[in-house]
Length: 228
Image (tube, rainbow, N blue to C red; front, side, top):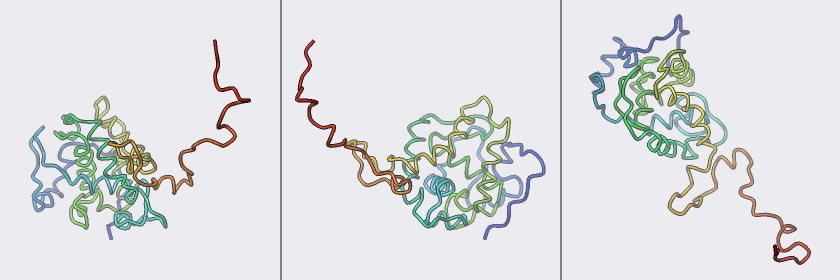
């Protein structure tokens, strides 16, 4: 069970060392083979899938092991079972094909990898023990209150203002919830067809695409054409 997250006493200034866990987290990072990156250095890819599954479980909890790990579950399937994690990865990889470089995280990663790195780095700052756990992603190992604290810190006024990072951070909760309820996880882009009933339809009691009503089929009063 993860330790309780202490109440913050002052605004959280995100600096490069703070994001990477601070002095207390340095042994943890080194033990895991995660050395401090040089400024704007190309980082190894983080555990993207675990991080994004931890994110969608946070927004739409279910009965999956990511939800169980955070201590917040549901009696029904949630975002993880819907397949929102891989769909979210596709969205961010398409939307951010270029590396994110510069403040406040000094990353040089594109797409979903950058998103996962940010979540995981801040998760270690919230709870260094999150580096060890069931999942490769530190964010996925956090308790539900720990994930809340991650987002509180990411939403600090002034953080990344005026940079693309600010826009990306603002999309995280909204986009993760939207994808969880959408058709994206079961949409086949090659055929433009759904491969299954989206879980979001079941959760929201949506009856699916309407094919029209019998009374509106055919011709009105036998008129089958209109001339100028």
